[in-house]
Length: 334
Image (cartoon, rainbow, N blue to C red; front, side, top):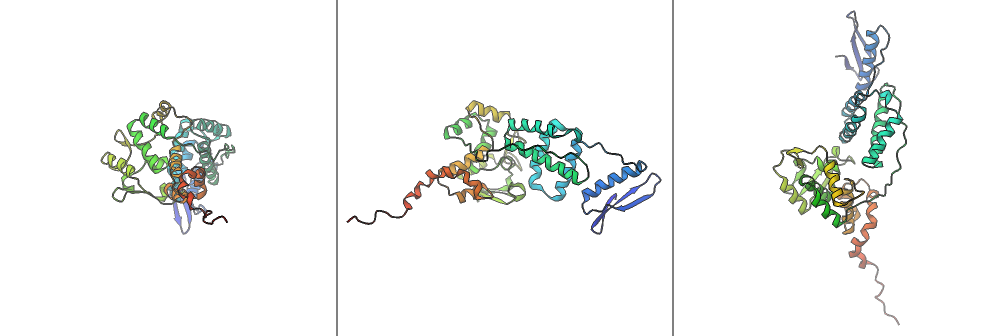
């Protein structure tokens, strides 16, 4: 093997043009770094001592990134990063890394912000920044991304009114209508709802669960299902062997598409993103009296601080407890 573990350190083996085997320590316990060292030394040996500087491009960088991710077992973020990388491919596929600078980053961020939100654009930049930082750790010598993130209003809570929900349901095609209604009933994040599998559902016990590797917080998430959610799931049984939600017999690939946007337009709904379905789920729970600690569990939020954004909506729902205050009229006036 050209890269192999010897003790706790990786070694490399290269055959010179004369046929001689050259073995030496890569000086690292990291296989990716060892492979990089092997490639550098191989270029040096085959070019008579002159290191041939490789022309690195976006495709090579992304390929290396996912190799690192798989070795580090970062499964919880791999799907998210694949989504970002696939979206960036339309601009950077085959492009030399030297041309992906702050200006190029800002252009795609501006576009992503217009398509989705400032928060999502910041996440795309965070992915690229982390990727470039890892490349520099491995000796690729690329310019780091120094673009400042957009300011984000973290207090934004946009949820659908009852008439808006009714209007949207009428305008959605059937495959999206079922998924949107299920998202409103469960509060699942888009990726977890879209990719929901039958092995994550127990209709007999009326619960579903998401393993920590597939959930944003990294913790396992269990969720009791409402009677309507169970009814929806039962209506989908038999459509696909592994996945719950499908389109034309195949699992969903992407839902934030033209059909979704056109349905919003026809329903007259503005300033609304797919993630706001989760806000709608939480907002109605708060308004209908679900205690915030219970809501935290139902939505799988990591901290109560994340749920407090709905606290102002819980006043009406808490009305049933208003008469539990201290008795002030038990005494008699003299």
